[in-house]
Length: 93
Image 1 (cartoon, one colour):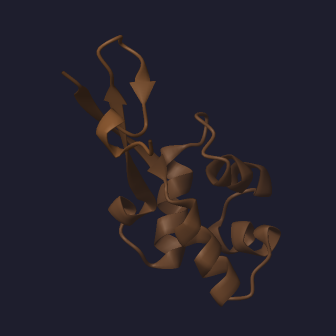
Image 2 (cartoon, rainbow, N blue to C red; image 1 turned 30 degrees about the vertical axis):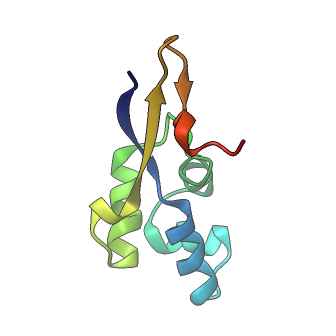
C-alpha cells in the first residue's frame, strides 16, 4: 500500500507571472521587495537555503498571502520505499 507525503515548494510561477505583468526584471523585482538578487535567485530556484523571511517579503510586495507562495507536491512512497511523484495507477502504460 502506498503512503502519501505532501511537501511544499515555492510557487515560482506566481512570482514569474507578477514580474511579467509588471514588466520587472529580476533585479528590479528584488529591489522592489527589499531583498538581494541573489536571495531572489534562491527563491526562484526553490533552493533549500532560501529564507522564509525573504519569501514573506516577496509575498508582501506582491500583495498575496504567504500561503499562496507555496504549492503542494504530493510524493507517494511505493511498496519498495521509493519516492514517486505519481502513483502507479496514474502512470501511462
